[in-house]
Length: 229
Image (tube, rainbow, N blue to C red; front, side, top):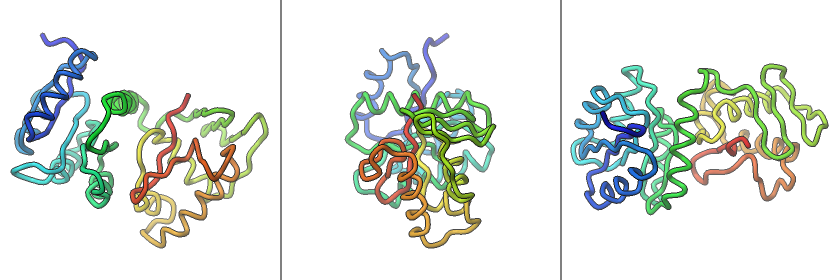
């Protein structure tokens, strides 16, 4: 029996696979490797990994197709995309298809391990996400619909609350502009509306709205709520 958390690495470049294998093994992971999308789908079904690291540029199919097939089959396997710098379109497509997060190459191992730990935490949460969130002096209790900052109640408009609820439910994960627009407004629309509401939320929740520490921008992609703590 293999010890460690099973993690499936889907990457066609041997040096990157070797780097990930030698770095993740000592950190408590049992590494499973695939070079193609076809192998990834087979191993995901057979080995039942707890998380997948997925490169988008595979020799037999695009990594986004791997995500689409897994999600179409009902798989909730956490997927972290390994993307090239500047590939915003690929990141957005992967996230909209159901990827949980992305890390841009070249990446630091400390950052990658943090993203993996966050993905594993999401895996064990209830389907609706953790209703309690705390970051600094901001507390959000979705069960009671209560938001406070430094002990003072924060009043939000219905749309502001809907956006914050989604961010809290998926804290630490990237939500794309399209995903937020679809969930809050019911259709894709002018992202400027979303930016206005994000700005208003930051005014109410951040110590310095111009240097946000809670609601973070993923440039060209969407927004991420900081991991609670």
